[in-house]
Structure formats: structure tokens, C-alpha cells
Image (cartoon, rainbow, N blue to C red):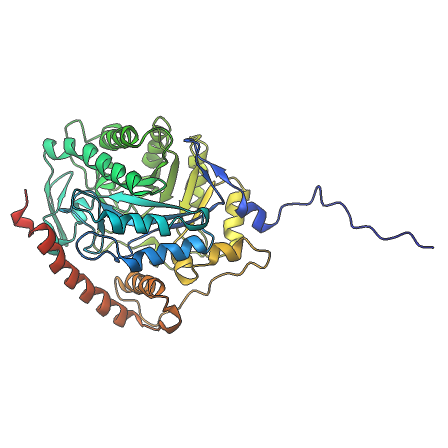
Length: 416
């Protein structure tokens, strides 16, 4: 009589893709993220035009939470209404609709997910119809003009960020991310292209980092030791005269001496005319993975990479190789809000990225922003815009919300 066939032991089998992606991550503050997949910050433009959260916005982040993401980040949340990136941004301040904000925090934290606002200030890139831009230094370039911040302006920043973080914590968000990338204000301070100051906030990378160090310290003091505080930085500005990779590595080393819990690596700026990494055609892999790998050698703080992840295998390889501790996806999760769930299952499945016949400046960004609106309305099955139509709808909505913004916060010249 034949011996029964026994299944070989699986004790030493290599982990599957879902196992690599599904491992929990404990942050330095003690908070645990349930897996390694983050929905990256995107400017969803779903605020009501007066700085408040909406039901549509709450539904959008609820979908990503239900879809399995460990963490979602809300792009461009402002503490100062004078310098928004767009008039659909949230503003956390004394007149915030706290009931709507708490609903957003609650619904975006479904199924053990974390939802963190990305605390920003657009600085020189503030939306012109509702702002008079100010940056580290006065600039008068084609397509970009701004006044210089005074020392008083700069010294007020840590308290503004701290207040914004405190409101976020009180509203029920699980953490915050400080935005110091993509050419917005704190990124401008780090960049020698934007920051031409000769005082204690300019010149060397250590001096350009000074305000960011002060902001981190103020935010940490406001929220306490056990609340996650992340940071998003550029690996490079991708601009001649901007932040270099070597300086960015110095920045990573300096961040290691702060209390941040997660370093999010990205790159590029929204400087007028600058090529966006996400719109580039060179290469098919993650954009900043090699820099992230180098950065991890310089710090014990967990490192996350944002940009260019399109397949599950790319995410698995990045994590399994030790290049990153978290993978952050934006457009992939806009195409499939249940992508985390799919990638954490044995079946897997990658999103089908659209191909466009035209490529007008800003068109792809507008298309994905309007795609987020369709997700928020549970109507993505009927979403079929071309780039030009998406841009038209996007610009018209911004114009309407600019009117509401000025009514809520005053015209730029009327504010202090």
C-alpha cells in the first residue's frame, strides 16, 4: 500500500507579495500602520471654497480606507488662508466647520486606516486669484512673482503649523504630514533657487533647514510624543539652481535629529514651466527609489517613496529590497480605490493607466483631479473626460471657489 502523499512544509517558503505588503509598520512614536500601502497626498479640490470639508470629500477618503489602504494623506491643508495652493483646499483655523472636519476624519479612518492632513503653505506658488504670494525671497521671473517674507512673517510660521496640527488632532485625525516638497513654502526655504536670503534662514543647507526644524519642533510640542508627525521632502527640485540630491541627503541626516516619524521622498516642483515627474515619459519605474535607498542608510526613521509605482511587483520589490518601509501611490489609487485590497490578496491585479492623445500643460493633473470627484460621487463608471474637457471643468470650478474664498476670507488686499 502506497504511503499517503504529504504536502511539503511551508515553514521556509518565501513570503508572497501580499505578505510583504501586508506587514504592519510601527512608527517611532509607537503608532502602528496596518500595512505598507499609502494613498499619497493629492490636491483633491473638494473643499467647499470656504476652507471646509464636504460630504464628497469624506466619501472619497472613506473609499480608500474601505479599499484597504493603511494610510491616506489629504493634500494641501492650509493653516493660513492667505496662501492656499487652490481654493478647494481645507483651512484649519478658528472658523473651521469642526462638525464637517470630524466627519471627514471619522469616515477616512474606517477599518483601521489612518487619515492624515498634509499641512501646507503655498508661499510663492499661492493661487493668484485669492492671494498675494510671499516666499523666502522676492522673485520676479517669467510666470512667477512674489514678495519676500519678513523676519516677522517667518517667525510666525511655527505657531501657525502647530495650531493647524492641534486642530487636526482634536478633530480625530490619526497624524499629520508637514509638506516640505514640490516647491511649496517649506520646500522654497530649502531650495537655493527660491531662497536667496543672507540672514539666519538662508545660504547654507543648515540655515535653509532652520525654519523647518522650528516648525517640526512646534508641531511636536503641540501634538505630543505619541501622535505621528511625518514630513514630505524633495529628493531634488529638478530645476537648475534648485535643491540637489546631495543637499537632500544632508537634509535627511538633519531630519534624523528631529522627532519626525516618517520621511516621504518625492521630487520636482510646480515652478511654472517645470517638467512634472508624474508627466514624464522617461522610464517606467518608481521615480525616486534609488534616492530613497540612499536616504535609508542615513536615518533610522522609516522612509516612504512617492511617485511612479504602477504595479504590485514594483511595490513588493521596493519593500523586499529594503529601499523603503512604505510605498505611496496616488494616481494608481485614483484609478482603483480598492487597489490596496487587491494587492493584499493572492490574486493581485494592477491598474490600467489611461493613454491620452494630447498632453496640454496641466491636463493630466486636471484629469486625475476630476477623476477624484467622480470617485467621491461613486460615479467613476461614467467618467469619460478627455484632457481638454477635464481642464475646462477644473478651471471653471476653481473660478467659482475663488469667489467663495474671497467672500469667506476677504480679497488679498483686504487682509493683514
